[in-house]
Length: 287
Image (cartoon, rainbow, N blue to C red):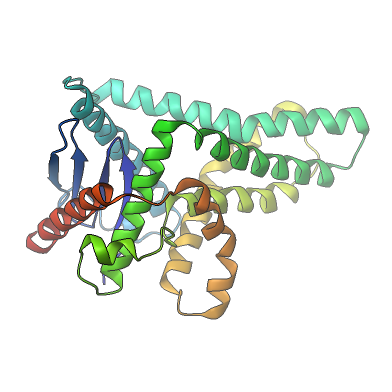
């Protein structure tokens, strides 16, 4: 069975398969509108077979598509026709990456380096503190943004997306009643990847020896693609072995973090998510 995924957008859900994607949105008037796109020919099959490299390509592709469809979703809500493509698209993604890297990687490294200089603690403890600080920043960030009303609704659509995929993978009919009974937690969620990225960075950065401040910052930047590749392969491996008790045990932290990024959806949100999945699945089947 193919591994389907998705993400929440503004008042909607984006569902993606290997060959097609579809986004369904609830308009301000209450209607559901759907955007379809066939992905055949966009994937470089040989590269997608290379471990670690395929993770980086997949993540970049997901960011590009996510930003593109987030803009389309926003246009549906505002009635505008703003386009995000070409140079403006990549500049927006680059700026977002810059903020993320600065907040979750460079800031903890700088603070840990300062602590090491002030207190004289060992580099091992300093690196461990850096990783734990990175984890705390992630959790606090998710808690705080989750209190914003618009983000709460997005997290509810995120829950609807997971419920819909869980229903399909349970071989149940995609009705609002069946979907509502499913869990908002899913092992292939992007939230799981983020936590895995942070935890793996704690392990790898902790074993690096003492470095001057500038070298420490550069090492964090250079290792991000490597850590991301490992995290992607870890998530992929666990998704393929969910039938094993040990795997189900070790992914519990990932599943627990999803409680911060998902909320229970209402029936209208489920209808949107079901529509997105059914449209994507039809395109996928006919491609």
